[in-house]
Structure formats: structure tokens, C-alpha cells
Image (spheres, one colour):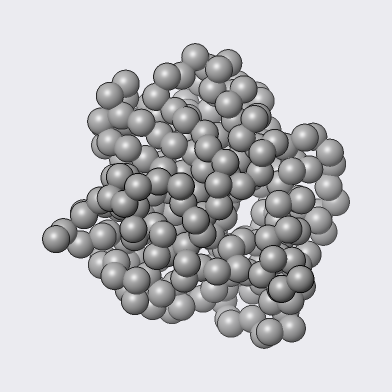
Length: 253
């Protein structure tokens, strides 16, 4: 088994356990600093109390990110939004309010159990402008230039092939489309030995890349206006990563 497949298998197992309600130890969990449905913790991650009041507990308890990408002001009414690694759907549901009834939000997750939980939440909320699909962020099952905004919440750092992710993001975005994500960013480059630790990778640590590498990879893919803003030290045992908002724009033709 290649290291990339091993990493992806470990991440999928961790998220499946979260979706099915099986408890994980902190050492096994992804982005463990967010694994509490406490309103104060979610507010600390950029969600307003007003936003949270309109969400059922079954949505909030599934929140497993490091920030609120829907709060970056990138989403407009009537647009199509894609959430990479949508989990239980919290960011999809918040984005659905911003795009309105004429817009659409698609949640993409590689874990079947997560997709089922998210669809159940959508039915509970009677939402008609959201859709959840099973798929990998390295192989986005959408047509070219079909999306206006792509959001993601502490997921890109978990991918073992970030160049492929960025190429896929660029492919499905329309010209002048925007990328707006919350993610973990490395303070320093990790060694090959550190990157081989699937547990630390699943904790959103050793899969993270540095700010310089993040910016470089996005620019090499073709993105413009790449911006990284640090907003919080990560709540993990490691001091080697920090939480940040990352935004970029696909240039007009």
C-alpha cells in the first residue's frame, strides 16, 4: 500500500467513526480541537451565535473544522457553491442561506456515512437548495467551470496530493470564481518521517504545508490574488501548525 493510500484510508476511517458516533481518542481524531458541539467553541472558530441558533444540534455536533469559510464574504446570492469535505454539512447549510433559493450548494465528502448524516440533516431542515455527493477532493465529480465559489474547512491539509486538489479546484471554478477555505498551515516544513505518521496526519498536523508552499502551489496552478491570513494557533498538542483563512481567485479569460 502506498503512503498516500495509507493516509487516505486512515483519514476515512477517522471520519467514518465520527459520522457513526463511535468515539475516538484525541490521538485518533482529525482536527480534534473542534470535536465538541459547544456553542462557545464554534463561536471561537468564527461562527456567530445567530448562525448557530438556526442549526439543529445534529449539525453542530458534527462540526469538525478549524474556522468558518462562509464568513469570508465570498458568497453571493444566486451562486453555486461547492464545499470540499463537507462532513455533517454545517458550512453547506450556512452557505445555502447566502446563495438563497436561486442558488445551490453542493457538499462533497468521501465518507458514505458522512453523506448519509448530512442528507438526513438537510431533510430535517427542509432545504431544497443543497445537495450532498460522495467523492474525493482529488477527483471532483463536477463539470469544468460549473462552480462560482469553493469553500473547505480543515480538509485540504488532510489530502496527500494537494497539487491534484488545486488543479481540480481550478478546473471546476468558473472564470473569476473564488476559493475561500479555512485550513491548518505548517509553521515549518515537515520531514518525510513526520509525514509518514498517519496518526499525526489525521490530527491535521503533518499533512499541513507552509504558507509559502500554499501560496506557491496555488499560483503555480494559475490562481491570482492568493492571500493567507493567520487567525488562531491550532488547538492541538503541536505548535507546528496554525489555523488560517486562504483565499484565491481564478482569473477571467
